[in-house]
Length: 107
Length: 120
Image (cartoon, rainbow over all chains, first blue to last red; front, top):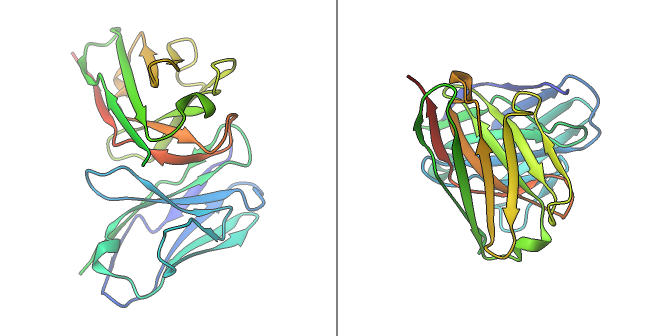
């Protein structure tokens, strides 16, 4: 089973900041990494697939990078509406596993 | 638009049973695989189970194998999770989620979740 170590667990940002969230896999998972955003009381939404591909409809300030074991979700010029819980998912091998999540607060 | 609405959560005693339901709409339910995923309080997400679009194959996490059963009724656009022999560590928000394809690939849509509390 692949363990995903996500960091930081919590971060506080100011509107306009660039934010990076890391997800490290315990073994090589190629580019089989997705990212999701969840706001309180709402269903999570799919934002990045296959490590780097922005899901249609997601603002271009979101981007993903990485391959193998190290992955990053970047939010450029963060906005107040981006306050949410973000988590990563690997689908390279069974069972699918998740990172521990990152809560992003906007000051 | 895709909607997944879970129901059936609640408080149950250790050793008890509960059945969760997930009503799906906004897509052709019978054409997609479906997952259950859970999140215990203060913890990360844990994948629980998957069922193929036609119910022909089912997969489970080791932590629930033999106790939980995933099923679906394509005529009712509904996914189920029968949970037996519940333990305190099963306490979590349970999410219904749609797969991108018929077989297991990854989640593209999520429900809002239903809370299951196992406590005496």
